[in-house]
Image (tube, rainbow, N blue to C red; front, top):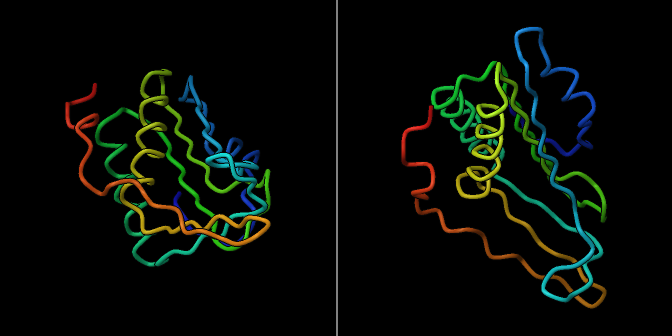
Length: 148
């Protein structure tokens, strides 16, 4: 399952939904809004996206993860709108027969979201705001090699 949402992300529900009897491992990554960046106090984040393209890219990431690793289930959800410190902004989960496949697929998912999905982040401070520079869209060679 993949989606872009303005609603809070229920990571407990994700865990329940992704677990199954054939998976011996379930991995969940949860990204939250932290209270600082580059020694500045952050009060909230604002996320914007091109939803249709973002969901298309999330689906491609899901398909890639399923092709590269023997995983049973994959979830990637990203929030949009204004998020307060401590709120969940992104969740990626993978379940597989063995832990290595689930760990690798989950890490791949969040890393690919950061580089392939059109999501823009603005940090809001006490005295202003700043759009954060993203990660280069150039393909990372970390995942170019074949994974088993």
